[in-house]
Image (cartoon, rainbow, N blue to C red; front, side, top):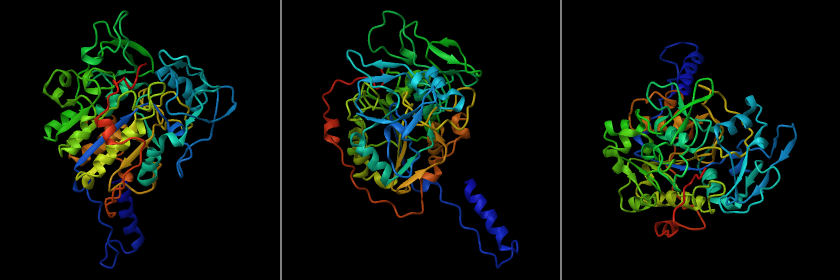
Length: 444
């Protein structure tokens, strides 16, 4: 890694005698991830920022207040995780809040009520933080393992493109396109509730494409064709599964990639998502897994019922109390910012669409740094690059090509952390026997 190279150069320079035999030898390079990590599980939750979800987390860059478009300081106030209103997280909402890096436009973001609910959004509804008592399992994991306070969603928009970036590092429709899918699909008038998206969406469904000038200048049917991380895994004969409540939803990334949706790999898209718990119990965990929640378990505003932290804790506990703990890395992150205020501007804007705002990141593993807050810039491409390095894969050449590899989140030389179960309001048995009709994580 770069940091190791710098230390090696420094050791030679400080020795004073160049390559003489009396010089202190440089430290050995760190061992490769592949020596210790054999399984990677990516848990993808919904629509939160660090300022909103991790208020008061020690040593993390978390704000207590924000500034609105009039220059007024707004104190962040507590709200339940299962609140009754939602905020726009379209690309236009990003532009409003970002305001050329001033991060003072959150108050301009549109507020919507949950369907069928007569809600009364509070004053300054964008400037809220979740009551820590509602998300204690998240705090438990963040305090025990590694929390990233510079994890940025790669895209500047909502769930549909975000779920493309987490499997492919891009939301471009083809390998050679300079456009990105920027929004959630728009369905034709008269479409029944909960339609399929991606390559099985109703005829007439369109997704907006954004160009290199940041303009949504065209649209297309939301079915794309280019390489994904799944293809690299297949080529190396690394097994993978993608667990989801519904195969056709906007948050099921493979459904929008033509060869995944209509090829043999579709058998690796597993419905329902709770089968991940059964696969762990049956000693049948794939080497790479993506896990997508139901709406109830998603943390999505106006949709969740507060069980998201327990859902995540149940997956972590199932792995932690199994034979997989010794060689697994669990990466927990959120797909977009959800319209909630966050005070940290993206460090760079590429292609007028990358990066987006911060989302939380938790890295759980016996080799994750304990009690560590990473201030290193990460994005969804970092997750892909980490998996590429673990399994010796080539780069996709998209967001992964310029991302870091989450290397600072691990200490492969430490004694492996002994797992301790994460307390939660409900546990594995609740989710394995869940009788709730699943709802979409994102109903925008």
